[in-house]
Each structure stands twice: as C-alpha cells, then as structure tokens.
Image: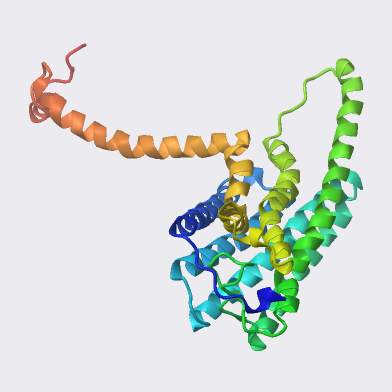
Length: 338
C-alpha cells in the first residue's frame, strides 16, 4: 500500500489552532464534570460515577493530544513516546468506559437487573483499565509507539511510522475497539430508547388516575441524558475512522482540510461534549453551578463594596464621620433615627 511509505503531512496553522482549542475545552469540560460530581453528593449515582471515570480518561486524552499538537514532533523523541503512550492508554480506555456506560444502562433499564449491573461494575474497572494498560505497555516495550505523521493522526504521536506491522498495531491500539463500539453502541442505544418509549406510553395510560403529581428527582433527571453518550461518541469518532479507511484506500480525500479538522476535534473533544450535555444542558446541575458562582461573586464583591461604602459614606452622611459616630456612641445610648 502506498500509505506505508508516504511522507509526513504538514498541518496548517489554522488546523493546529482549532485542534488546540478543542483540546483545551475538552480538558476544562472534563474538569467541570469531575468538580460537579465531587461538589454535590445528592446528584451522585452509579451511571454518573461511570461518567466520572470516562471524564478522567478524557482529561488525560485531551492533555496528551494538546501537548502532541503543540510540540509538533519530528522524531521519535522520549516525550513523543510518552505522549503517544498516554494518548493510546486514555483513548482505548475511553472506548471501554463508553461501552460500560451503555451496557450498565441497558442492564438496569431494559433487563431491570440492578444487582447484575452492580456486579458488572467490577468487571468494567478490570477491563477498562486493565486491557488498555496491557496493550500500551506491550506497544511501548516492543517500540511500536513513536513519531506518526501519517494521515491517520492530526499531529500527535501514535504508532511509529517506521514499524513494519503498523497496521496491526493501529487496529490493536484503537481502531479495532473503535469499530467494535460502532457496532455495539447503536444496538444498545436503540434497545434502551425503545424500552423507555414503551414505558412512557404505559405510564401515560395511568397518569389521569394518579392522585399526586410525580416527585421531582434531580438525580434521575440528570441521569436520563446519559443514554446520549453513545451518540456523542459515534458523532465525534466517526471522522477518524473515515480518514483511516480513506488512507487504506489511498484516496486523495484524506487531505481534505475540513475532514482533518473534524478528525482532530472528534478525537479530542469528547470531554467538552459530555460537559455541554451533562452539565450545561442539565438543569439540576446547571442551577447548582450558577448558584455557586453567583454566591462566590457576591461574597467577593460584597465585602469589598461594603468596606468602600463604609469609608466613603461616613463623611457624606448627616451623622459625621465614622470616628465621630463611634465616639458619639460612648456618650449616647440612642442612635439617630432615620
């Protein structure tokens, strides 16, 4: 295949800037998801705990991609290998945690087996952390990770471009799990949506005879949107798979700047997309976040404004200066009325 010996592809400055911004927003979004989970215990649930672990790996993924694009490697230096190993581990772990969230929701919602879902959490940890770690360690020990300026990346290091079996390792360290997720996630998502729709129709038949209104549960309302994680994943990751297939087919469309930008954003922005969906677009969490921000701003500005107004108004009021009013309190037990 011609792509095995292609020269390095230079990225435009605009492409680098867009990918760097995507990495930065994803990093901040992942931090915000982690913060909201720690800050408000009443919103914690098992699905959102799985989202927390997904946000942790997205945090490291966006940071490693940011460093790789910013560094603009030209050789397989030590930091290139470190960046490639970190992005390989976090990227592969992200695939498994995304499928773990979908599988947990499928077992609890469709199968209605909460005990089985709780038991599966231990396997989620073993697989989502263990398998990527074994793959990454093997790739590093066999010197498969290094400088990769081919068409299957957007500036960061991944599989060494000089490796003879690079295609096998590209599949093993990401693309095979990515394609597997494309096959599994839509099936789970459609089954969950179908079950929820059937449950809503059944509930609507009995709603007129209910004696009381349903109780608002912010945690349940926040958990409902977790089923959109597979959609976010597929929409973001599909562009890298398209470029990978175009590369295998030696298609010139792989150089399309729009496709390159979508590839860079898709690989690095999952943390930001999850933050938009599960923090900014979730009223239960957004309300608490805005309340905390407003209270912090009021405390910082209110204390400074009070000190400034106390000093300035002490001389313009009809009661004299602050010192005079304090001295007057020593001689009179009654303050002037307003």
